[in-house]
Length: 240
Image: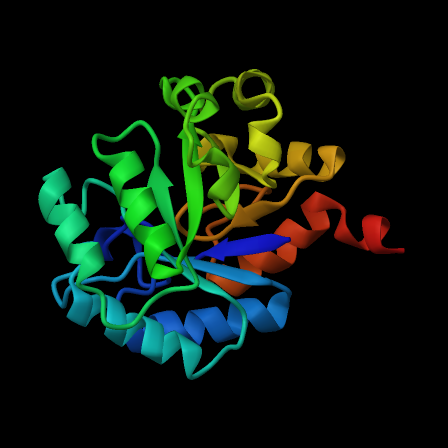
């Protein structure tokens, strides 16, 4: 599986290629799926471009994207979108249109309560396990571990990304038997994606994780990143 991460917490300062409105996210999603993406991760935005967990904002984003694609669509629940754990939980419980899955960063306060609420709603949970945190240790003893949809092994180290990735995977161990999606960000995005290909793990690529192509040029779209990501991942070799 190659997931496309359409925008992340990026904003207008990161360039016009980053989709910030429901319409532009839907267009970017359709192009990325046409390029080969099989799953979508998106950060719904307020009109001013801020990440939001508002039921109204989430609904508008999901409805726009689902009108254009038929693959699963997931959203963030990152603490930066709603810092207060109780308010974050209330926002999620108030969603009127549900995503197929939602990422929960296991190192954030209130993560397990949030994950439990999502599971109760019938929403798949992507357990975000960040390198450099205690998330892997927390997840290893979590009773919710076997119930999550998959684990997002998120490498945040741009300087030694492959080493950090292997360390993180070792910390995760069997990961409660759940599938693992391995990815990096910024300078680590491409090295970690290539490692995921070599290890046969799911991965993701998109303007959330990197604005730059492997040759150093600026990416013009999520679809371009997906196209190049499939090459770097070795999809043609793996599927031949």
